Length: 50
Image 1 (cartoon, rainbow, N blue to C red):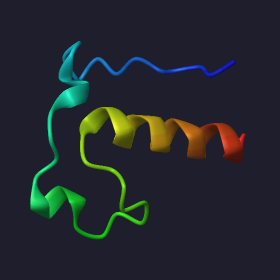
Image 2: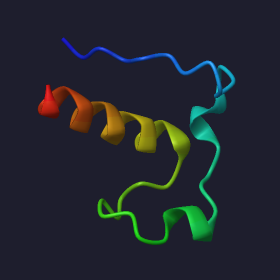
Image 3: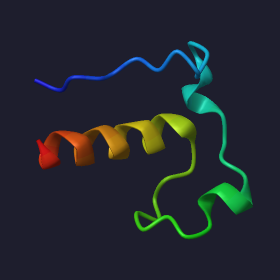
Image 4: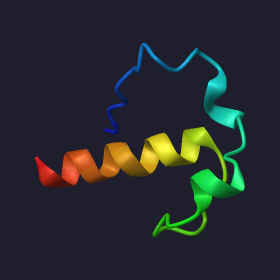
């Protein structure tokens, strides 16, 4: 089961906010285009490290 951490700095519903070109630059997973996808990838990395 996937566990998602809530981030008090990101307003609820912000997941569809597109990332700017500058924010996307340098991301290794090139499929990431919005904050929700970025949050999911970060969470997966955290869980993998644990």
